[in-house]
Image (cartoon, rainbow, N blue to C red; front, side, top):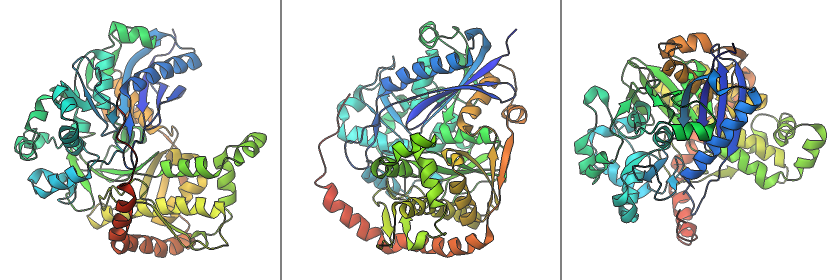
Length: 523
């Protein structure tokens, strides 16, 4: 008999990846398919849910083919997606418009209005600014600017909810998403009804999926239609999933208090679990039961990280593609090799990583990226290294905020795209003076989803059981103390830039954004 496998679906910003794992956490196969992101205006970002499904089907077939697996071998399915990626649709899942994905920050005015209420629910924002990425701001934007779509929608939910419905025919909401992005608080009775009524969204609560499930809870089995399209067995158990980075905590083994996860990709997230409540400016949370029942999650993050590096490659490195092919390397490999010879600090270049605004600690969607220190000495590789350093300064700013509020750690557990670059990881270790642990499976969200799948299949009873059997580590990166001293001073200069330039950045952006292009395209 062939070995049993679990499937971890990881739907990120750029693609959906389907991973197949055995019950020891060994990666068997991966299939990935990209979908398109639309940017109708600066700060806007939309995707078509129908593309999500088509790409999931394609990725599943790729993974099954690569593994030469049979559908009988798949004993459970888990999933994670971007969040907060809002879908307005009918009860049958038919979307009324493209999704406002997580990085869409058009709801800045709505977020400011919500913050002005000073409602106690806003402790999740550290009693500070409200992120326009979260559900209330985006839903309020839809209600104000697209009332026809808002009122027609029978369901307003998230990417993970829509996927779960498409797979099982059942509408659920994840405790992970509702707690971290919708202001749900199980410890205090559930929905903060007064808060939603105060901001003009009392009717939104009836549009949400009504059944809220814990991560790993069995939602149901694959419908006949979904099974046929995916090439899997009808009634294969599907586990409740959640937000990609938060499920990534499970794939990293960060399921106990004290460890700090660094999830890298298009964005960076810094996440940890605690037994005690933490509410402070510059932090999101703490969120009860969001990942592991009985523990609270604390969050910080950067909106643009890997997406900036991808932007740099696509805009300025076309000429390196032939050289990369000739050597069997990637363009990133060539850039890393050349940037490694540049000293820490990039000979005076300093980058602010605010391409799509700042998530934490400033929670400011209106600011934009900056580069200081250009001279005729600087090369393309200088700028590439400076971008990596600027991202690391932003990560360190978040870690310093954690430390200032009592979350002490010098150990990071890293997953995602940054693990492909030794230089990038070393820069992070040097800037934050922290050891970085690298898991054997770098795609932590996929592995985390596979662990949730194992729970739905009754292979393991709890998240901790799954982690004990399926998570291992392969590398440990120590900080260079000499480099850290240089970076410590530059990170301090990075932190000074926001208070000095925030108003200037907003005024300058307003001049050009008023003349920005055309209205958003519609599905």
